[in-house]
Structures are given as structure tokens and as C-alpha cells.
Image (cartoon, rainbow, N blue to C red; front, side):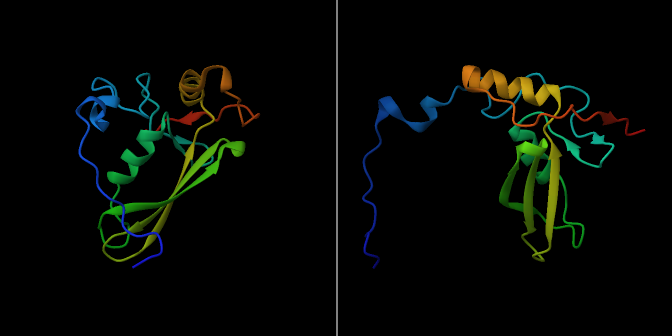
Length: 136
């Protein structure tokens, strides 16, 4: 037994359940203003992200390049000063690691983030937004 012991469970509070705190008509971390450039690549090879949720959606729909298994996020590296966000994943089957580097310098992401933070928003990347490259 640890020195901290086991957390005692408390009876559910009907007035303050976790599900009542989350609006049912909106997904937290999802930008309602996503556009056609979502998941396009930049010239540098970064994947365009337009909110936090889409980064995890991208990982969930990408199979392991080694065995085709399911990937799981094990770390999120904040590279906002470079206009980037990096997710480190591991295959749940073969343990192969894959890093995904997302561009968050684009105006869609930055405006969404500014809307979330209001007056607290400070743009961390002072370079110009990276441009999407047409996938065709």
C-alpha cells in the first residue's frame, strides 16, 4: 500500500455531474471554422492543424507504418514558438514510434486560439503563417 492510500469514492452528485459541465452541442478543442486546408501539408512538410482535436483525429486515422496497428499518443511537445505542435505516438501492436508535426502558424488555428483565450491570447510565433500546398 502506498503512503497516500486509496482514494475513497464519493456518491455521484446529480447537480454537478461531469457530463453536465460539458456543452452537448459543442466539442471542446474543436474549431467550428475548419476549412478545406485541414490536413494539407505545408511546403516544409508539416501537417496543417486548425485546432487541438484535429491533431488527435489525424493520429487515430493513421495506421502504424510498420505493421498497420493502432497508434496511441504518448507525448505532446509544445513547439508554439516555432508555430508547430508535435505529437509523439507509439504503435499499440509492435511498439514502433511515429512523430507527427503539425503547423499551427495558420490564421484559422491562431484565430480559434485567440477566441478561446480572449484578452489572455499572446501569439507565440512571430513569423509569417506557413502556406498550404495543394495535395493534387
